[in-house]
Length: 114
Length: 113
Image (cartoon, rainbow over all chains, first blue to last red; front, side, top):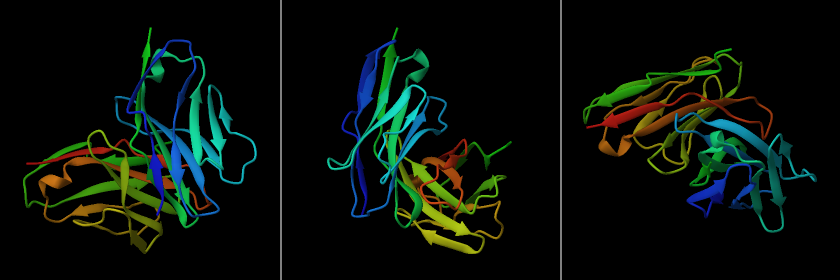
């Protein structure tokens, strides 16, 4: 069985600073994917970034980067130059070798201070 | 470019009533999913489908049923609503390739009283 753990229920960050949201995972699969989704207060799920288990380079998408440490089974999301609009819930998720079904962590609520 | 469309957006049900949550996607995705999100929690997989005519249970299937008669539609049926089914329900779809991103609908907020 897969498991995703997000240990930070809530975090504050000052506008324009960088922030790291932690995610650790557990799986016996050799091939898997790691995803981060953003859920603003309006409730929709917005895809941010993806990292494959065999990708050697850390994924980056604009201000988002994924710090993938396979041996430690961690996939932390780094947001650079935080903006007020980054205030939201952030979910780490993983897909398995069996398919694209996602297992989600409990989420981290990020609050950006002006 | 509608993506994944869910209806209704909000619904209040009485205990024991039944309803169907509708989900349709226009991206020709083979994979479709239903998740539920309880307050302050992450999403949990209820059912999924890898193509028309094929469905399978996820982590929390009890109290729900699904069907997949077409590629576009994946309705979720609640037969005897219970307060424990009060949640936000998300439908999602993805292409067939492994480890591809899932596209989510806007969600349906269901309250059972």
